[in-house]
Each structure stands twice: as C-alpha cells, then as structure tokens.
Amino acid sequence: MVNVYEEIRKGERGAWVSIGAYLLLSGFKLISGYIFVSSALMADGFNNVTDIVVSVAVLIGLRISQKPPDSDHAYGHFRAETIAALLASFIMAVVGLQVLIDGIGSIFKGGKQTPDITSAGVAVICAVIMLGVYLYNNRLARQINNKALLAAAKDNLSDALVSVGAAVGIIGAQFGLPWLDTVAAIAVGVMICKTAWDIFKDSTHSLTDGFDEQELSDLRSTIACISGVEGIRDVKARVHGNHALVDVVIEVNPQLSLIEGHRISDRIEERLQEVHNTMHVHVHVEPKL
Image (cartoon, rainbow, N blue to C red; front, side):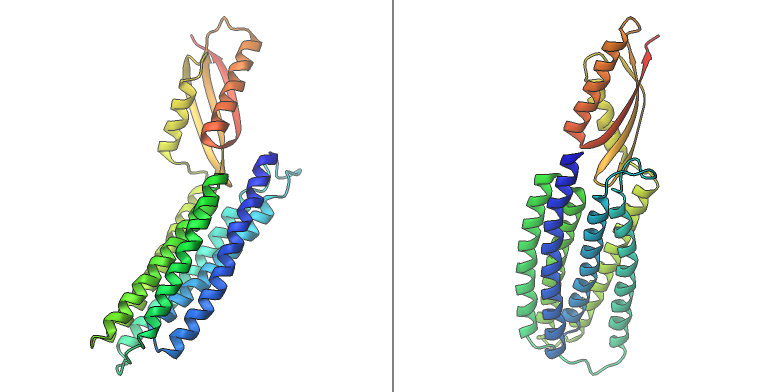
C-alpha cells in the first residue's frame, strides 16, 4: 500500500499546478473581459473559477484518501476523492447555468458592444498556458497511473479549447457581428454544464459500485491466461479511488493440493496488480467438476 500513497502524494503536485494556473488565468480573464467588454472572455473566466473549485476538491480528496485504514474504513479512505468530485460537479452546474442565463439574457438587451480585439489576444495567451498545464499533468498522470489526475488533465485541455472558442467569437465580432461574442459565451456555459454532467455521471457510477464492462472483460481475459486456472465462474469488480477491488471465483484441478491452489491465487493477485492497477483481489478457489 506504500506505493499507492506515494502515487497520491505525487498527484497532489498536478492539483497544485492546476490551482495556481486557474487562479492567475481566471483573474486575468475576468479583469480583461470587463475592460475590453467581452462576454466570451468573462464566461471563460468564470469557467476557470469553477475549475479552481474542482481542483481544490480533488486536492482535498487526495489528502483525505491518504488516511490509513481504520476500524470503520477497512479498505482505506480512497473514495473521498470521488465524493469531492461529486460535490464539485454541483458547483460547476450552478455556475454553468448562471453563465447561460446571463448570455441568453444579453441577447434581448440590445445595444451589444463589440469587444476590443485585444481580448482575443488574451484568450489565445491563456489557451497556450493551459495547453502547457495539460501537457504537464498528462505526463505526470501517466507516470503514476493516476486516473483522477488524467481526468483533470483532460479538463485542462478542454479549458484551452474553450479559450480558443472565445477568441474565435471575439474575432468574429470584429466583422460587424457583435452577437457572436454572446454566442461564444453561451457555448462556454454549455461546456461548463456538460463537464459538470460528465463528472456527476462518472462519480455516481463509481459510488454505486458500477464498473466498466470492457474492463471487466479484460480482467477475465487476464485471469484465464494464468497457469493453473481451468475455469472462471465469476468476476466482480468495483472502483475504489484510482484502483479496483476485485472478487474472483476460479476453477482448478480437484487433485491439486491446498498449497498449489494458494500459489495460483497469488499469481492471480500479482498479475492483476501489475496489469490492471488493482488494489485488492479476493480469490475463491473451486474444484473443476
């Protein structure tokens, strides 16, 4: 379990990098959006504010998940990260809806000002910075095999794309179509809500012990290739933080000794931990009839 906790501590670096970047960029975008009269840039700034909340939630979850197992948490506290992400999804949804309401309302106000072209440059600069954050977190996540940080990296990439979209809307507004800036702001609001929904769906799926069918099939295939396994009666798995808890019922030669059956179980545990990043594997051995 030592390696698991070391990976979590390394993952905190990525969360801190995201928090620092979002703090700087959200303030930069909101101030610039106000000065240069850009709804799209303002919406992009609010998007980054929600990303701060998400990153802080992930960081808190990572901290809590490092607490060792206790009397009423025999498997540890690794699901704290998932719970934090679920709470963050509600906050994101509220902000996303507010951006949509403000954007749609501005359509009917009339007298829409054309945003200063400088705001497009601000959006492009922010997109480049977020692309750098994405590359850093993506590399770190793959090094430590951390799914949560990898998801955060993908969110960094989507933020870079949002900034590009804001720049496109601002530039389009320079050609006598100021409403394009508002349309870009609404698009950002939609993306915030979509991200909130995706986080909510993934979190609730994990918390209700849902598990990807393809990954379950891969687990079965790996077990079937292990020497001594003559059949698989059942394979169950559930997500626990960034790892999986697996229950397996296998069939072996009924003539095998208890020690030989135990060795097969050990090989299954070791192989699943190496290939599928499992945290705990429970193997039940049955004689093949």
